[in-house]
Length: 572
Image 1 (cartoon, one colour):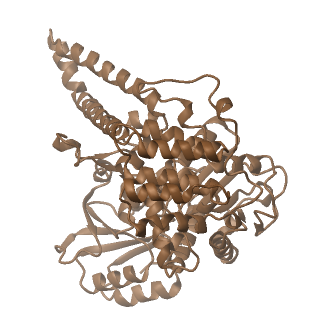
Image 2: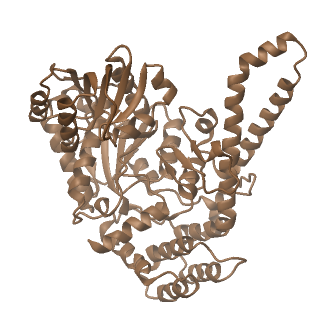
Image 3: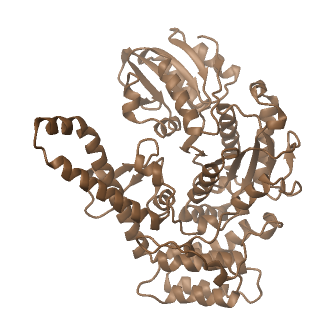
């Protein structure tokens, strides 16, 4: 077994390109026909940045999971193995080498590997089939070019006393270290002082950075990027609000898992549209419009369909041999465009159905009023009216979200009407008591003592003033009245850029920053981020050539996921 090599890839805050480059290098290690052997975590890591056709062009003819039992023996194939360096995978590797299915093995780990780990592999390699072992720092899932996640959920990322937290702490540390090495960054670190989760993770990362020789590749301190570790409880509002950008709506209303949408529940859906991929790498329309709001999206999808129909009519007139020849040459592209049109029309149609059936155009303005306007009496009337009036009842989760938003703002108000609103949820929506305790659990999770007091979470403003000005209307009348609240992350980044983020509230580790402020900010949110926050990061990056942000998180959450995770903390 050859010596291990470590080769960080330097790409400017683009996690998709970083992972893609590693994957291309991995598939080039072995020449000729090969199998790509993965584990349950590296499978989505690869699939998020590489399409199947791209992999086939690298002479990869088979994809297998190391955990699959009774795999066929194929000694004429070389195995390129991409694994996380876990104890479970170590046992799988040792079993594989004792009973090999392939002619040779090139083993690549997604993070740093201990010498003792390698020694155990060498001892199992009695037939000397392992030709090379390398470290490629690809231990995270690149969702967008500037957004990555670890796909961790549950009470383990919300409570430091959860039995799952030590595992989540270790996995989060591994993911952050891998991200830093893949981008060849050596940051200084700050964290949210009021969060035990953020504090422990910051110190865990700091310890690994300080004791790893790999970080000598970092740049001088004067230009070092900033890693800021936050807790989701700093802004519990954003995960409870209705999303209005394309990618975020897909996640919230349908469920976007590893860039895949399941539309099999849609009545009358075509077979080929039951499972679709939404990837900015493989879908030009999605890449251009993934951050558009619903109103703008309605306009561009109509233009997209009109353009396709126009091109279809032109292609339908085949009057000469040249016309036929040109059509045949362009037919693959034509079919791809046709498939894209059908896919996005089906998705947007389902989004529209969800919005109408759940009355989200009625719900969202009330959410925004709760988030942006301080008036207890008005809030009570607004919430009560929408809960008990209207042509159809709200979806129970939407009704609960409104009461949770009311709780966050008015729980400390002596005149709050939480008891009244809770009774409505129980009587009108039949929400059981065991789910209604979410109201109490959210108050505990996001209490004022656990948030930074100097930040104005609710961004109070006069309601009439907030809706004045230019209002954009699109296909369904979506206006800026639905998006008044801005994630708290926007204010935190703004303060960082101005060197005004309070060092008492967000202490430093590793080293004190030097002026000017950092031009590269790496955000990591324990407890999860939202796709609306991902859209914010994209907007910041698009508007500045001198300043770049990268968003990482334990998981990408939507309202029902966030509520269920908090509900599970009742057992902690």
